[in-house]
Image (cartoon, rainbow, N blue to C red; front, side, top):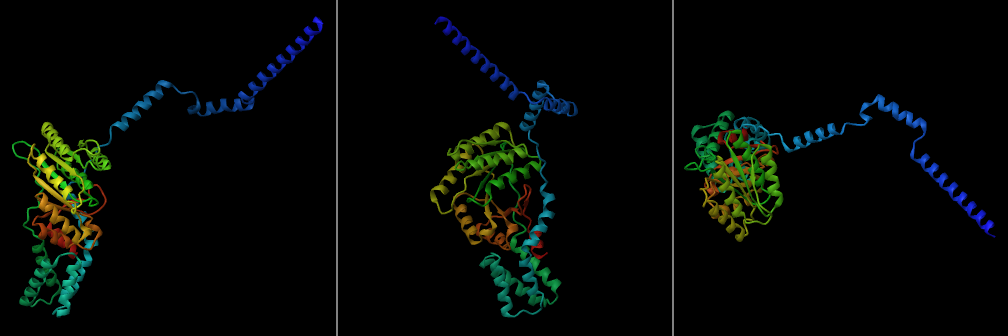
Length: 384
């Protein structure tokens, strides 16, 4: 009996051992590629050294170099403002020429009938010149053309140009005031409603100042939109300008205060502060804007308050201008998207509404598509 049990155990052991050996052989075969594939891999490593094992120290050095490149962004050199005027004028003339063509076609035809004078008025009103300025322009044109007996189209164009330039206001102070008193930085507060291109305008203004070799500090006081601060940092990083920001929902006045404080410490030339876009119909938000200005001025006087207006908004833009002018002392206007509309008369209307000049105009989507406004350049573009 014992012998039979021993034989049975030996038989089981042989079966288990055989199964184990078979399992190991099968797995070994699955893990290793066939001999011809192994030969192919060896040949490919010889023909293509990049497939051979790499030096780990070399890889680490390369990775460090790539990381350093990412941490050191390329600083751009913005185009000088003077260099932009000619290029931007051509864009303006293409988009605004319908107004000039309409006026010149009517005036160049000799004696005008009452219906034609009414058509001139309609053309000006459609271009958002405004009722008051339109009446003034038509009255002056009728008087001059009649007194001089103008029938030559070239002379009619010259008279129209002179009257339009006078209406736009060539003597208005369009300089951007960015110099503070007693070694303090100039402080520029940029205000406006959402969607006018306010934050983009701040970024473009930074480029204008950098092109003029001024040191700049940006303040992201639009704390209601985290994206606004991110956007401002992107603009600043491209030209090497730092940004002061806080967390979303922080007190905008506090951010403005800290920005000017740092600007004084760092002895920068100009501090640009981007404020939250405010609906002109919301009195609480408008009051808060007044608070931002008061708190900022505890550090240094505000040298400029720029109101950004979308040129395509027409009469709504005038309403915005009126309300903002009641809350803060607006000193200048930036008209954006002027290339996307044939309503160039908004320049005249908004200046009349606020009694302050248009100082900059945005005429495109590029980073340097912001130029100082020039009355003669603007009128020549209209009539080009």
